Length: 324
Image 1 (cartoon, rainbow, N blue to C red):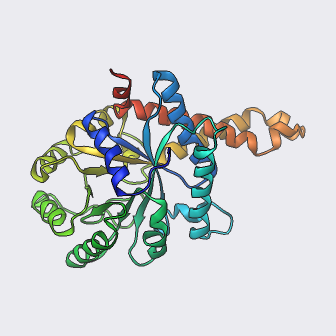
Image 2: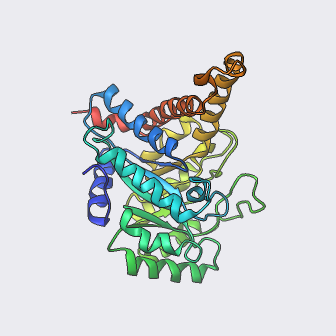
């Protein structure tokens, strides 16, 4: 089955990626068009490299204050409705025998889930998921550990759990990264041991929802030090939009097993679609239906986004799937 849910099957998929030195792509979505763009990118990769399938995560936040993706899916701004809508759409695209995406392996992921405001998604919604990020980063450290440990105890048998020690920097946010360098590795080891999480969302110098790539200073030595101290590869990188291709190319070898990205893809795809819209302005104002109807804009967005994600898959070493 192309859509993988549950801890056991998801762990097998991710272990196969780690063995091949591939960082799993976690592509976020907040719309049906973005979901299809992710699948199209995977299909393009399979066609280009002559492989049967590749695994990736399709992710959504729920009520995350900085970017509530599930609320953006429908005009209702209802997070539960948006979440279920994407899941139904995903199954239709992947499970239908006539679909060109039926061979793509997808691990649905819940991102930045707050233990209070996202309770439904973390509990009842867990049956749709392969993994979830329990985001208690704004709580005092001892409460973060307690809440995360409790979630792992109650739901860790169902799905893989990501945890996070402290707040990450977000572009245009009043909160920016504090001075976390002192004792960070010791804090991380203690946090993982106390909570029992499967993956650690680490502060590696990136900025979430960045407006430009290459501006962040990726903390390569910290990533390597964390992996060594933790004794296994289990790091998750957020804010990949702030990195350039060269910075992303070494992630898998530094112990980063999952890479989360959305902002850069959506920005660039939107710009591309807008430029295409401007170019057909005469036809548009001449009431040419194909130029006016919003389908054209969405198709342009899908094409651009899928091309960008194809490049990202190759940067994350997915080409190892093509090696015999």
